[in-house]
Image (cartoon, rainbow, N blue to C red; front, side, top):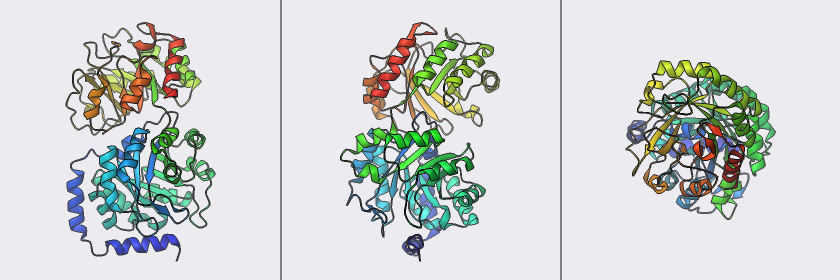
Length: 461
């Protein structure tokens, strides 16, 4: 019997006496209180660095003891401050000395979605994880037949919970895709001999369709490793042992998570788009909102978008709209070559679901408006409340965001410039920052010097 077989058998024994009907009822109750598929949202939209899934575990068969009796809440909070997008909790008690009791404190202290890593072979353990607070469940393709994997993915999907399907070779990738997997994790550790090779991820990624989220697991120990996997095309990396062995978990997470992504918005000229791309911006914003001094005609926008991608193929183009119909947004986005849409008015994001990923702008005055449950947007952008709906160059009180739930990855906008962006990042810890007026000489005309200075400040935080 292999270690994997032993762990699977142990997991079945743990769940033997549990009632699946009661577990399902409890999982449904918990799921109704949460945003659906939040784990998936937090992994999407990577920029130069992949998203970080930071792991908490006490031990492993390959490494032995790692963090005896870990302070789960403190570690998870430190990971969040360091820029992690999600938390992984290894809950298996036999060889990993973990517990499902760790899931709730990890979620509560970090505000991030939690992945339960266990050796799931049937619905009881998966449902127990969801009932314990997990928003994603690890499924190991090597442990599951395709039909069983499909049933588990379907069950979790109905609960609004994500399945991260772990694979090790081409055959497992094909079976996972056949079962309906939308998040695939390539484990660089050979389960037969526990050797690790990052080349496994690089070799297998071409087999995974781009519409799936792609996660690299095991053996990531440095910023260079994370960048290497990002260049290969991975959306996220899952890191545990390396982070846990560092004396400062926040600093270690920040080293791997990288700085916030940068969006240079309100671009109207090819040369400004090229400067932004070369300086390291992850996004440029093209404004199509009526009445904006930075508004572009779609026919002019394609050349700007193409020029930016020519300097940085990974850069993505955001179309900014305000109170326009889904039909108009779709037509302009197609003509302009837009990758994401930013909704900056009072439109309902649900009307735009099913097309391009959505950035939902929220206008902040003396308080954050009450956010309705948003099940379709990929990002939330917090901007200063202004009559023009953005681009006013005015900052709001960043402390207002302390009380907002971390349901989506966050853009911070409103009055940012090279002089204050570092302080803003330290205060808010956003996943991305958005600047327009703060790098301009006049509306729509950017300063190359200010663009470079802004991005350099972000990268130094």
